[in-house]
Length: 71
Image (cartoon, rainbow, N blue to C red; front, side, top):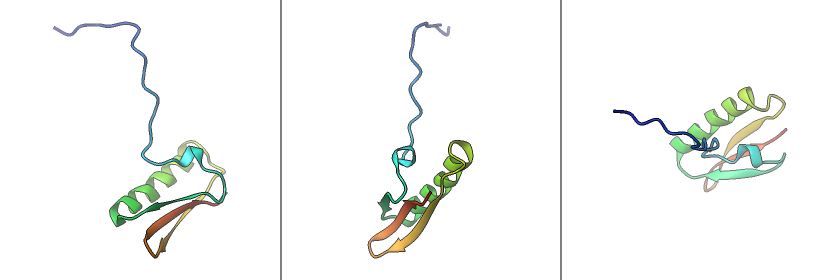
């Protein structure tokens, strides 16, 4: 039987990436290509769903891939 419970707090949405905390010019490094691609797609989804005026860009750097908030 399934037990019904009341008063359980819903956990806040947690993201793997700190998009909502970033200011224009801020960036973070991702060293694995698959994770960098995942972060790029996540940034696109973040902009579409939450902050349509924001923009992110990803570039290859010496030690991995870096994602910057540009707007």
